[in-house]
Image 1: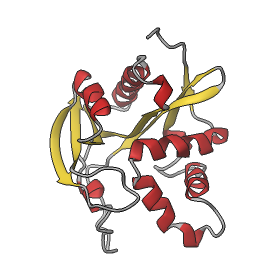
Image 2: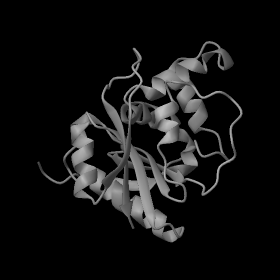
Image 3: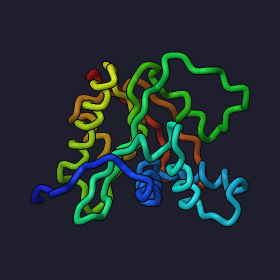
Length: 195
């Protein structure tokens, strides 16, 4: 396929609904589960509307401020969502949600975390994902991080190949807890790459 002419930029507040749609793709249904569980706090909103509201917040990890988008002809086609994983995190007294537990436990403290990298299906295989990973490396370097980390479903073979081609290796794994909203079974993989 021909190279894609995309423009890469920091996400803005007006991108929040598109970010929610792309995060939903990257999460393989985990976002649907999370946002559906928040529905009592957001009466009358769909899960995507809830996701957009959460991306619209500032001063939090889960924010458009931590995202980069790629657009073609002014339409957002891809997103990169990153933030640091602290060396030491405060203990959480709330009982862990068993569905989310594997994703919460698989992390590398002190790494620069790629929380999501997503492309609309018609734009894959054209170098956008590789460019987004390059942007993540630049962000990590600028902030003094030597290691990048991410999670990927082992069944997501296209994403797994992209990450392996770009120097990521499996650093841990946990079984996916089955749920009707989650698209994958098998394991979720923690992958890491030195920067």
